[in-house]
Amino acid sequence: MEISSLLDVALSLVFIFFVFSLFVSGTVEFLNSLVEKRAELLKESLGKLVSASQLAAFYDHPLVHVKSGKKPISYLSGRSFSTVVLDLLAKETGASALGSYAFFQELRKAAQTAVPAAGSLLAFVQPFLREASGFEDFERRLETWYDGYMEQVSGWFKQYAQRIVRIVAVVITLFFNLDTIHLTQRLLNDDTLRARLVSEAERVAARSDAALGQDASFRSYLAGRLPDVVTADGAIRTDLTAMQQVQVRATYLQYLKDNVEGFSLPVGWKFRPGSSFGDGCSQVLHAFASWSLLGWVLTATALSFGAPFWFDLLVRLVNIRNVGNKP
Image (cartoon, rainbow, N blue to C red; front, side, top):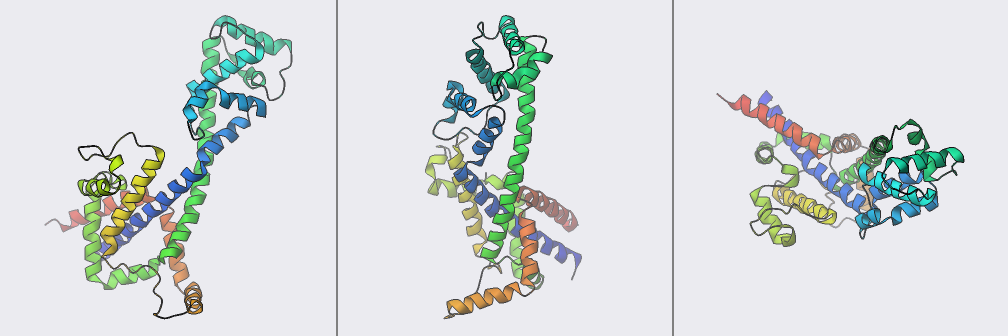
């Protein structure tokens, strides 16, 4: 087989991985929106700083309460965090003149005259009070520390999200019977399928933001299914809620699925007509004992890399192919 044909096989495989990676990312986003893991991690991380009563007071603060709305708050800036902490410190210590050097001195005196109770906000800010030269420096140190702590919390969320991605990738691989080895064999032997997938891959790569489907054909598709998320001139609104963003992503997945459905991809489980449940189970168990298991492992691993990785690789391969085809 010529190198150009092998490149087309690779491009077709990358396109398939990209499409199903979108299924994975869409599913993960939907699950995260249901379990509200970001909000849970934020509350857990703040709970490590203060006692349960102080944490309750923190979430009851008007600045936090108004941000949460109907759902638990999942993000709080360093500036908002310091503002809430200072308000609660004023109530805890009885300090007056909030936001002034005198207020800073009152807090420092309160921390020096008695040992702050464990889990109190005063105990939490005591190191910052010792090191700060004044109120503004104290506030800046508090915000800087919080921003660094939130980076660590973001790392915890990424680890959690990656575990979910791997699980969802395995489930989707098995549900659609995505066998990389079988896919590669089919692409090597089916010139028509390979050509159609390459053509679709080039069309997707030509769009600057394929993952969000910001092309005219998708906007038209979206307007017919979710008219509330599209403006009068056909553009996707920029003020979408988290749930609406998930709906847009899910609609784009369906849009891609509709586009590639006619390609007769060698995916899915094909059971013999009239076969019983036991026959189906036997067929699945036989697949686990064959080369399909290795093919599934390869696919699940590939899908766990994420749609952005495969889209970037897709664009690179399309560019290499186009350069190679120039006279």
